[in-house]
Image 1 (cartoon, rainbow, N blue to C red):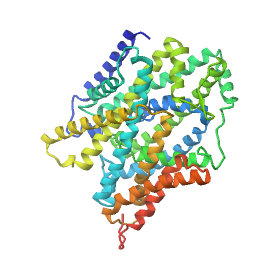
Image 2: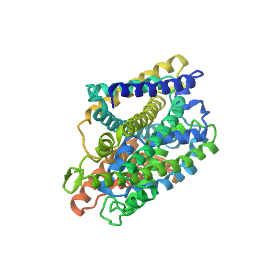
Image 3: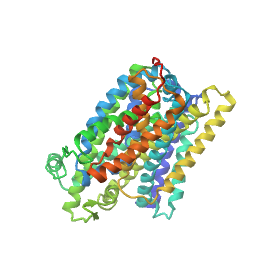
Image 4: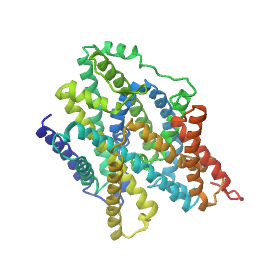
Length: 487
C-alpha cells in the first residue's frame, strides 16, 4: 500500500467519525458525555458493542492462537453465553432500578463508601492495563504494516491515535461513541468477511470445500478434557461465564453503553442481541484461524517454534494479509485494525473518565462551571496513563489476549467477589477492611497458582478469576459485621 493511500484512508475514516461527532454533540448537557442522555436505540447499541468486544486483540490473537490451542477457545465462548444471560436478567435490572451512571455505585448502596471506591479502583487498574494492551497490539500492527514505511516512530503513532480519539469523543463522549462504534462494527464485520473470501480464493476452494477443510483439519479440535490443562473444558467454560460477567456486566466501559438506553426492556434486548453477535463473530475468528494455518501449510511458509509452541502467533494474520492476500486484503485489514482500535479504546477511555469522575471526584454533585473542567482534566490524565502503559509494555511478546485475561483474573476477581456477596448474601461489612480483603485475595490467588503449577503441574488458566472471587468472598465473610443487615 502506498503512503498516500494510507493517509487518504485515515483522513476519510476519521472524517466520518468527526461528522458523526458533530451531529451527536449539537445538543448536549453536562452529563451527556457520561449517560448519552439515556436515549440510545437498543439495537444500535448492541450492534456497536461488537466493535468494543472485538478489539484488534481478538482480530489477530484469536485466529493466531489456534496454532497453539486448536479451537479450545470455543469452550470459552459457550461459557460466555450463560454469562450474558446472568447480565441480562440479574445485573441490568439492578443498574436500572438504582438509575446508575457509574455501576460501582451499587457497592456504595450495598456496603459503604470504602467498598464502593475499592471496587472502582480495581476497575480503573484493570481497565487501564487491559485497554492499554489492546491499544499496544493495534499500534504494533499499524506500525509494522504501515507507519514504519513512513518513518513515523511508534511513540508518535500512539500519540496520533489517542489525539484522534480525543477529538471525536471529548465533547459528548458516550453519546457519540454509541453511533461511531456502530459504524466501526460494520467495517469490522465487512473486513472479516473479505479476509475469509480472500483466503478461500487464494486456496482455490469452494465454499463447501472451505468448510470441509476447516472441519477436517487437525487443529479443528473443540474440546479439551485433560484436567491438568489450562484449556480444559470445565476451566474454559466456567472462565467464559465468570469473565463475561466480570468484563462485561461489571465493566463500566461495556455497561455504560447499555445504560444509555431509555428503559430496562430495551437494555435487556441489547445484552441478549449483543451476546449472539459476539459469539458468532468469535466463532468466525476461530474458523479464520484454521484457514490461516491451512494457507501456511499449503504454501510451505515456515513459522518460528520454541519449546514446541509457535512464536508470535499475533503476527501471523497481519503477515499473511500484507504479503499474500493482495492490495484489497491489505486495505481491508488496515481498515479493520483502525476500526477495532477506535471502537475498543474510545469506550474504555470514556469509561475510565466516568468512573474516576463519579466515584472519586463526586462529579454529579459539582456545580455546572466545575463539571467541564473536571471532565477535561480527567480525560487528559487517562490519555497520559494509556500512553505510559503502552510505552512500558512495548517490548512484550506472546499472545496478548492471554495476558489480558490473566490480568483480568487478578483485578476483576475481587470485583466479582464483591458483587456476588452483595447480590446473594445479606451480610454487611466492616467497610474499612474491604481493600485489605480484596488485595489479599488477589495476592493469594497468584501464590496458589504458582504453587499448583510447580508442585502438581496444574495450571488454573483463566480459572484464576474464580479462585480470586471465591477467596474474596471468604475474606469478606471474615470482615463482616456481627449484626447482619439486609440488602
